[in-house]
Length: 403
Image (tube, helix red, strand yellow):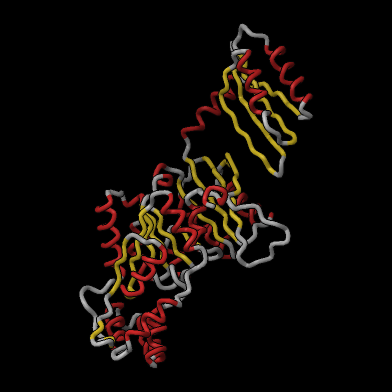
């Protein structure tokens, strides 16, 4: 019977370690059943599960490996694996796979301990832990620092909603973000990202800026509050607010557009998505004028928002066409996906408000970004601690790949 041996090698990282060990195995015609390698702070850990043919003497192979690792100043350990143990390991590959992503400005041992405790309580095995964020200098004390660790876990979840709920509660308690996703093919084949505009792509509500310029800030704020209380719907409140802008000089729009504060991480996120072949869209209950400005500035592919009619250099205070409310956003998302030949499971939608929930709910990955609690609880994922480029981590894209 063939012999199965687990080989673990550890020591200072240097070029040629893997090549040296696998060359020895190749010389002896040994099959590699599994291999894994990791480097943390210039320390290498290499693991190989090998099958030695029954007609070969395993001791001579192990002796060669022991001699070469000693020459390289590395430690090696050999562990025999029984056929039953091996077959049990093979049978585990059919189990469900999941991705748990931990995001914060800085990750502590307590964060990881708490997350992994939940993972263990649900009977899940951690196969791999990867740091997706870049290396951070000890002197880096900026608020823009970011940290991300991704856990690849395996096992059956009787109720994924309970697991997700516990992670969400922990995230809220510790002021971090924790995302849970099934590790399926769609996670690797996303192709379209749709963004809300106000308080998502930009750190402002344009209609409030326009209202302030028109001297009607308080009236607009009152209508917004009534809408939030459910006294009037979005379309009615939108028309009432736009009516208050009547007579506003067109030059004000240009001035506000050029001073829009772009959300942290937005430019990096979109430029990375473009390099990867993604399509991007703005689906906004705001105004097309500002959406088009962002389209040119950021390189967005599609913009759907509300027109703000102007005549003789003055805002008319009227609304043209169908108002882009929550349901309209969902319809537009479906329409763009059909046009691009993209399954909705391959779509990402990002927003902060209740009127974004319809599009967040139909997208394969719906992300509540710096959103109200009710939106965070309803969306599949949420990011509150990092900038928009934190979305790259949810796609499994590390900083070293996106810079």
